[in-house]
Image (tube, rainbow, N blue to C red; front, side, top):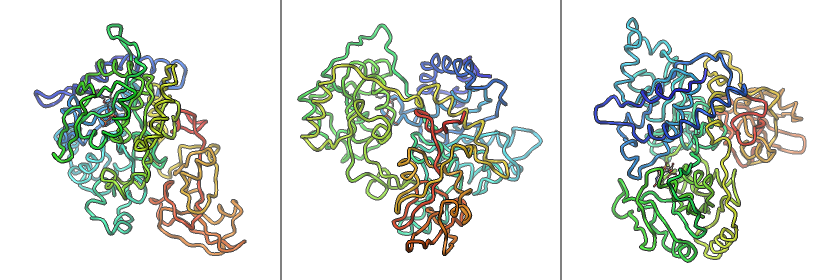
Length: 544
Ligand code: UDP
């Protein structure tokens, strides 16, 4: 049954150590609770969330905090909030769905749970048996901890299939596989190549903040559609701009850009002195910006509702704030990156386990939302910038858009789908995506299955690659293989056309390397693609 009483959730947020509180998370959950509740009731009454589901025992371990990276303490000082947003929303979703949730942020709590859950069983038993949970959500620090300290087994033993890893930026096949990562990134420091990855999990065990590559599961979070309460003044100033920068260093090098914008807009900021930034990287907020410092939610919301534009500065990448701003009716200026930022050329992405090429500060907004809600432009090009600003100023109506997948209902529906259908423990395993939603497509040379499926109006579906990894299957796709090769690489199954009727066929020799993201110049990938619901892309069109 869905749970409609918040108390059972808030008690999870009583910090075990005296004097510490999860204030930011508690405030977010409490503020948004009426909307969560309403969404859950609607989903239940419409039958989208079924009654009589099995309540699962779910452990949530926020490993970053356990590691001593106290995001919760910096939350009101301009520190990163994406993780706190995602953990708050995850625990609320699972709780409201009626599951038995245990939230931990201290190593000692895990130790306690693993050793004392049942008096009769000892810690060593967990290495041979599954831990006493149906599911364990953690993050990358958490998975390291489980591997090294508690389960003392690099493969996580029999509990491996229970883990779900919150992984904001995503993990691709070539970084997930330890042997492949070390062999293919030899020029990099092996300890660093594997710092965020090499877990040999299934790719769908990684839960991302945005739908980066469908190899991973898209978990997302909720965009808090800011509500104006009556005591705040709401009039939108058609010439007010709010700068997206919570810390001073984000202003570094941005004067020429802001100098132009200040000709059109009164500029406001919510920036505080940088935390943990070397002095030489610190930036300065120009005098013409009315800087309020990092604000509490209500005042911040007021600023959003008063502003016409929300001004991207190029960093942070892929955060929640621009989606909130668009939901509140602002137009987002999204800085374009040309060349794209990636682990090849960018410090931030350098060690991230993904080869994704980031073409703007917010690729989701660029690809899934677009104009007139957002303009993705080269902010160093004066002419383009001025033209864009003029276009924005010419729109007098207030826009405002919030994709369903980022609403409370969207997140509850999606997470419920995963909890009920994504079974990674049973043998033999069956994909949770029905065959009827799958379309098999042969790609153009050099394209990844992500691109191939997208071009056809579908999304790549990793779980159906094994079904197509045979000569018989390729034959059905009208390919007669002259030579068959079994190779461990991230682009197979694939084919190379040697002459008009002659093909070399490559089959995947390592099931861990099936990948939607992989591509190689001469190879034509054989892709499994699936349908999706508009605005709820994680689900196929007939999935529920
Ligand atoms: N935010 C806030 N006060 C401010 C500026 C931002 O509470 O003065 C909130 C904003 O509403 C958003 C959150 O900070 O929910 C995260 O912002 P961002 O996109 O910068 O992501 P992060 O880098 O923190 O993960």
